[in-house]
Image (tube, each protein chain N blue to C red):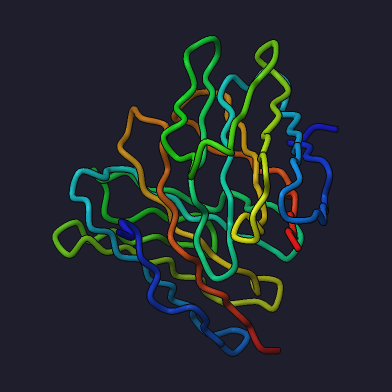
Length: 112
Length: 113
């Protein structure tokens, strides 16, 4: 049973446009969410996080939105750059615990 | 180095052989995780170590898998009698605190023929 789902395995976006990556979760107890980015042959690196007490968190070109009622979060990248091309994983956990549940990832390709 | 170090980066083995994968976490990080990523799958939690506490082994897929962490630092993941379905990238991560950001290594790609 996949508790964290990324239903789009891939996404292509033109450079300069907005990239929107989506993530759904089933466990309403999750209250801490993260996005990781992974380049080929490298480990995932932390990108941005959000606690369930917020509905938006912004860091430069990256914004994460959380819709608790829909159990949905999204990562917006604007403007998208070719260097953003990578696999993006969302992860969820219960705050105060250590077990992060990851989604299957979305491969983003930003076209120059 | 300052990051999480894993070895070997690539391992090809024959079905039935045992393999050991090593992880050297960031110095001072008390929490250490093993995840694996099979083809087309997300990151699957395997095991978690925190300080001197008993590890959380709830993600280990079978009793052929075991892991230890010596001296609160280096960890070894051992897979006995490897099967083809064990083929995956095995990722180690560490964090400063149990609920902190995870820092991942580059992974060990295991191929079982």
